[in-house]
Image (cartoon, rainbow, N blue to C red; front, top):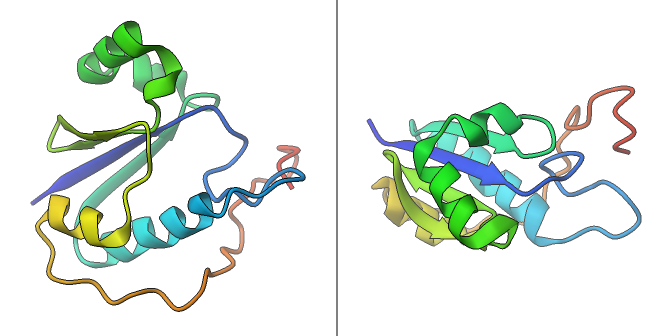
Length: 123
């Protein structure tokens, strides 16, 4: 089974619906991430500000951070190897990286209920 790991830059939540300016790439990627998980791909997502131990404990991510600094984030690993860094791939590329058939294009961006934790100051 393919394992895909996403190592996000520091932010308050992964959906991108936080703060005064919303980066439209983040909600799209969150939807694509959930779509891929529903296709049977083992998915993990880590946020530098909330899970720094995951970054420090992964030798591949630790090395790329030492070389490039945080500008390399997000780093996406497929089966432990760097598949992408510095950007969020589109759904079609994610599907190809994970070995999943052709994806259906998403119809708008979903609102992901419960994506921010109460008391986090996120939303």
